Image 1 (cartoon, one colour):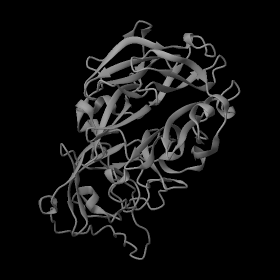
Image 2 (tube, one colour):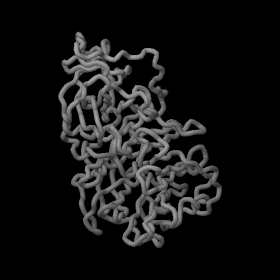
Image 3 (cartoon, rainbow, N blue to C red):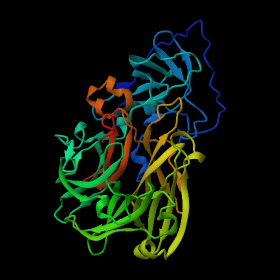
Image 4 (cartoon, rainbow, N blue to C red):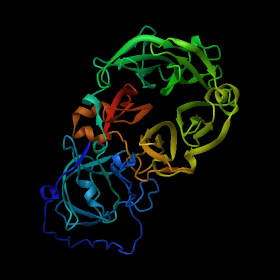
Length: 466
């Protein structure tokens, strides 16, 4: 996580000498725009700009970061004026990097920053070859300013590879329960093959960092009358605690025709099923002719809010909807008490990291305000985020949802394992269903880092809130 160190210590001053063969770009001082600033006490304020792709707005990308001067001696200047952001350091002093190309095909370490004269001294190249030409586009990247990976490894050690149902492909998080004795349960959908079959298992912990996986099945599709035989069922978001201390678990259930439908079940803290899985009876979110599943549930300002994901065959045009209701079970079982139902995200209408497969979202309540942690997988681009799923932040301002323009804020280390081999297991992308929990001065988020072999390793990150 981040810490800002004294400028006196970190700033190195250099005498700049321009390359005689190259004319530097003159920065337009009349250009308008500024980086978004967030108030202390907001969830946004806990995050730094970890992947700086644009001078003002990483989502719109209307003013990309460009090289404006190169001195021929491994120093560059850019059109980015908020250079102090590159002085934000991490717990283990992990470096900032200059990134270039799709999926971070070029990775160059930043050695030092001269704030007075604007020069960036480049260090070792870990991948590719940096195009230092005037006008070349770059990004600045340090994912670790926003999180630490719990134990710097996958969540389980040793890591399981099979359960009584057989050898599996990967495990994903499916929501956390805090039990009355102070211990924790993490629901863990287990995926067999290439998403051929999925069943729900669980893990336990006493401290949210050291976890034990249990090969005891809670739910599979052979226990659900309306599900495909040997198909997929998974839980999403943290189970919602009811007034009787049982927990409502949101479910995505594969139907016999291959489409998903939205469902839920109720369990107690010992994981016994109290209410068998049943479909959510809001018309748009159940039935064989639609393809959707629920993502998240919370109660905020005396109303219940539910996020749903509508699936389409393409990587874009996938939607996230929000349904607001006055009574939870009246809404789920009878389609009554619905206040509103709105699309809050549609991939084809967005830009940047949002223009792609948005299929994960979780509510977070922080200091009496409501936020959504949104995961989206971008389609092909010339940026690090190409074909990569990351997470950004949306905040509720009383009548609309607003994206944090610095998003994405939680990004996997991609090619940084060339510098830090310890992260070779998490280079590909983030995925699964993020399960956030605020506890003991941290935001814990359980997710999965991708490697493609297997698809993912279930993992956890933590973010200090002080």
